[in-house]
Structure formats: C-alpha cells, structure tokens
Amino acid sequence: MNRFVYEVLGGRVVFGAGAVSEVPAEFDTLGARKVMIIASGSSIHLADFLSDQLGDGFAARIDQVNPPLPIEDVERARSLVVASSSQAVVTIGGGSTIGLGKNIAIRAPIQHLAIPTTYSGSEMTSIHGVTVGGLKTTGRDPRAKPQTVVYDPDRSRALPMRVTAGSAMNAAAHCLEALYAEQRNPVKVMADIAGVLGVADPAAGLFEMAVAAGAPSSLTELGMYEHDLDRAADIVFENPGYNPRPVERGWIRQLLDDAFLGKRPMTGH
Image (cartoon, rainbow, N blue to C red):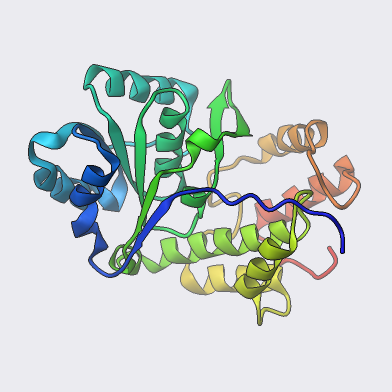
C-alpha cells in the first residue's frame, strides 16, 4: 500500500431539523459574548431570527456577500469585527458567505460558526480564497476551518430547485476532483466514490441534471463573455497546479469553448 497522510481537522458538528434554534447556546459553548452575523439572499430571514435570539449578544451584521470575495470586502468585514468588538461570527449561506467568515478568521482572533444552506462543503475544510486584482488566490490555514458547523436540513430543503441543482453539481465535482487530487488518500477516496456512486458518466449526468432543473448549463448564463475566454485559458495554462493530464492550452481553450456554449460533455473529451 502506498504511503499517505490523512489529516483530521477538529471541529464540532450539530445536525438535525430545527438545529438553528440551538445556535445561541453554541456560542455559549464557544465562550463568545458578542457575535457578528453574515448572511445574504434567502438567508436574510434566518439572520433576522438569530439577531433576535442573540439579544444583547448581537454585535454587527453584513447582509451582502459578493461571490468573488474581493479583498476589499474582506478587509471591511474584518474592520467591522474589530469596531463591534465581536468575538465570533456566524455565517449563514453557501460557499461565498462561509468563505467570507473563513477569511475573517485568518485575519482576526475570532470564533466561527457556520450554518451551510448549500452543498459547497466549504465549512469542513481549511481552504480559503480571496480575489485580488481580479484574480482569485487560494490557500490553506487551520484557522479558516469553522469551530462549529450547524447542519439543519430545513435550511437546505427551502432552497429553490435551480440553486439546489447547481450546488449539487458543485458537490459532485468536489467528489470527482478528490479522486485524482495530488494529496488523495484511501479514506477520502472511499467517501468520494460513495458521493458519485451509481453515476456511470458523471459529467454528462450532472449536465443533464442541471438542464432538467433549470440551473445554468453554460458560462454564458453565468455572465461570462466570449472575449474573456482567451484570458481564462491563459490563467489556467500559466498557473495549472496539479493535474493528472499534461496541461496544454489548446484543449483548455476547447473545454472553455464547449462550456461557454453549453455543450453536453462527452466521455473522454
């Protein structure tokens, strides 16, 4: 058997329908008296509920999160943490919202409780990302991993089908990527295989699911312009990272073309 390293990140998980009602008590466990809330979109109503539940423990709130997570937004959020004397932050939403909390946590001494409403999986990793000068950079830092994660099925059940389908595609993509990741290990691989078990052609299957659910199935629908494709291909080619297949600009550009037009993926393409 090949040598491998499996790193177990510490943390507390609370799971169950209606589990969000236990959030104030979880901050007692964390020893946090002042809490900042970050939420956006459909999670705003839950932020209203928690604001009331926290009472005097509520310190500040951010109701808008920009998905690219520009560094300027991260610095403003960090400044708000300091100004409000917050000792903890609760993030309610998907990967971008939780990602903002993770970026704050590596820049300020603060506890982080995440309430995921999608299937991004960001809440269980130490990976963080931020956009600087139009380019996204990522890294790993143990401080980025939330101390507590509250999974409430009622939150995910309330998502629109379009959002659910797109988020499920993202989750499945994480499973597939982990199968060939440079730091893969048998423990993680078993979990990832279970995540996509029964899908003979994952790429085509995910595409068909997106189309059936009305989720975006092309880069055009996500707001990308054709003149951006060359720049995107250059960015990937110049910073390829680990890839099991030799990175060549030609097939990267073709892949982007197909995704831009919303073409159905083909096996071996």
